[in-house]
Length: 187
Image (cartoon, rainbow, N blue to C red):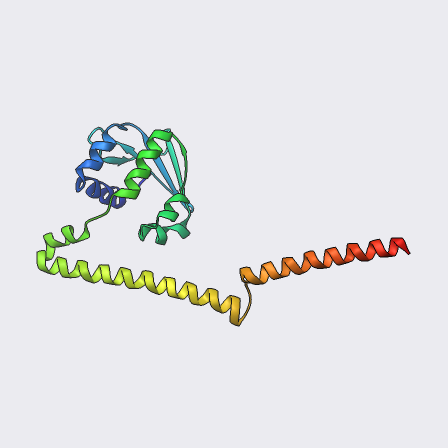
């Protein structure tokens, strides 16, 4: 079951992209359930291409499982995050939902322009884009810094080179033990 505000927002998004509605019309009557952590949202595609909240007893054609930890990455449109979403059920419907998730973007600037005007919406859109880029760069730098700290400064994580050195040392020790065993057997 999808809450009304989420359903309304999803339909607003679909109406702003007529191509998406046209593509979904072919799947009228099919139901997709989105499992995000402990929550489940289910929608049925209508003949118009819009969606409506599906009652709990309706059979689901597609089950989509999304880890809550993927949500920030999905919001940043990270392709690798989309590949971690698990879908089961109608393969053709899953392919369409996946296509829409990959290619559709909300034009927040367009919606905002209806409230504050084109110029203010454009400036707000530029500010949001800059903030998004800054957040992505900050997250990348933080991750790289943490990785360097944990591998070099306070080694909680072994670097690839150190693991390879350790494995090489284990192999050399194993070979030395085997040679020693052969010498002992000869004596």
